[in-house]
Length: 75
Image 1 (spheres, rainbow, N blue to C red):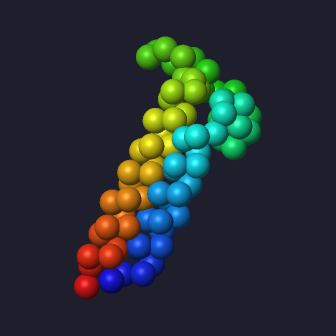
Image 2 (cartoon, helix red, strand yellow):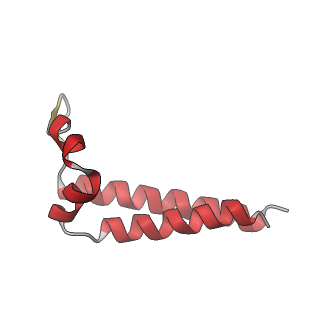
């Protein structure tokens, strides 16, 4: 068991889940004004929507889950 990898995975898993359930206004606060100042429009459309933030949180949670499983199974 690789404790460092498992610990990082658990932290990312929890942070991603918590971030996903935050209200939209809190996403903006957590990510910071500078990120949103430059990310409102893009050639693919509007960025910074609530769904986009939730997907980022779920992605981080999934990465954390994968790291946790890898860290626990590693010898």
